[in-house]
Length: 522
Image (cartoon, rainbow, N blue to C red; front, top):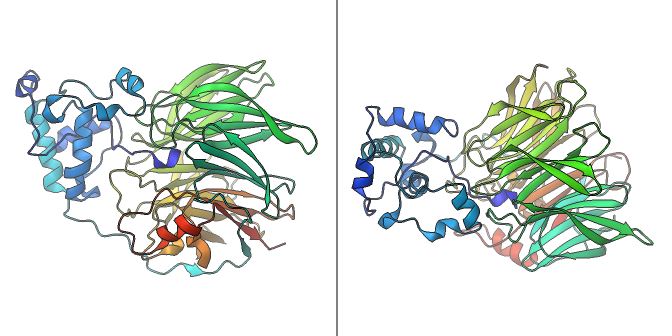
């Protein structure tokens, strides 16, 4: 599961500041110290891997107890002078081969101390949680809340898809050793199920074939290459899926797949966002025919989480737009030059953002597709509410330059889908949060942003928004009546520590795996 990845703030900056740790001073003495200040050293080392993170972004306790010790491992700083085996859980050989954790220190002791002092001395004691000026408006004007007649028990939904042509919904369940792909009728009754060895995270269908991607042995952070793209064939009366072939094995914890003809040969190629954890990659799988693919790595870093295939420069070849999380966060354009790709970073984000999702849509009607960007993954070492988590719109000037023109603060935002939900000719936005402020603003779980023109939106939620912990969402015309409906999937692994709302207990006992917001405007 892409969304619970452990977010590290860089791959080469920070070090431990615990007085109880022991270090091999001789090894440090072999490295010459610089005459740079702590601020200058931090900026130099940070720029190698991601944009600079200021000390005021996190409270002192998190820097000292979580972030700095973890980053120390990236510089060869370990307790008792040895590299612990616990760092290699979930793909030891891959992590070791990538040299994520050097066996010896790579920084002079004096420089190391200056960086630590800089962060600890300049970080605030605490950070005030973001406060809403106005409460989210109650009620959805033209959506009807529906729950399925079928339940999987504990909700662990990792994928949800509204099927076209009034065929219902398909969703996946991530229970250990019981991974089901469940098809529901338009009435939300169980139609049939497929039992799988590992958890599905992406569904795409074409004609009588389903392209189903499974994440591997665990939905939680790992680097093992055990994800698989399956081709599932629909056969027989009613076209029930019953035969599966592994088309592309060895995917490294995939999070998303995009499909399109990148080589203009009439065959559909695949872009795989192999998120991984400490390692990962963005990969093109070129379709060579006969259910075979050749592999081309575009980016050998973890965190690939969304990709879009489109001819952006109108040269006749489809390009790739990709969102990267997990450290070096940003939006990258890969321009296709007859099979050769040139990388260009369009937007860069803080490694604290927790980037989650992008989509293209023309918000100002100028004929150029803009970017809607969502960030809010808080399953990391910095689980505090952040005032920069939420939904962004970056307007396109038509020359691949994007400028932020709208921001809606939404704690723990996970996905936002722009569509004309009220059929008034402009784009509204439906957004979910996996880490909302349940105590003060439970309506943040789901927010509907109604477009009033000129990038002004009014927010709405609904009373049942807290019926689940929404991690996945899809939009589509489920009942074939001409308007766009929504399906939300809930993932509840455990009751949160210190939960005073009672929601976690309710989710574990009676929470639905999914709900539907049926659009009633038609």
